[in-house]
Length: 66
Image 1 (cartoon, rainbow, N blue to C red):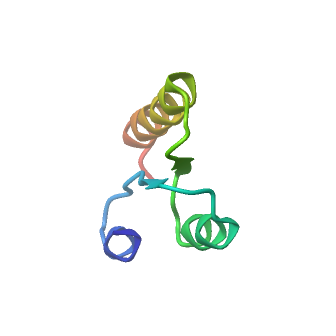
Image 2: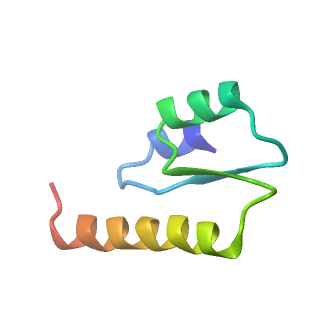
Image 3: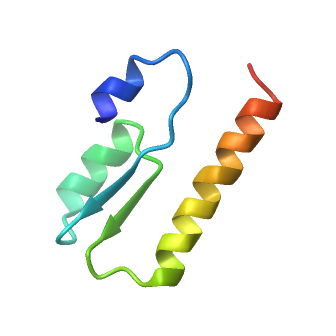
């Protein structure tokens, strides 16, 4: 998914959901442009935070295109 979004003309905020905390996967995902990384043991507040930040970033990007 991250490779596909890197080829897009428009920015896409991608959050990675993983069953287990994996520092290698986390690092790889973030280095390839992931907006967030959430493990299966997330709390609702953590998920809401990641989604809210992604939405805010998308709105800001649309308001101020490069």
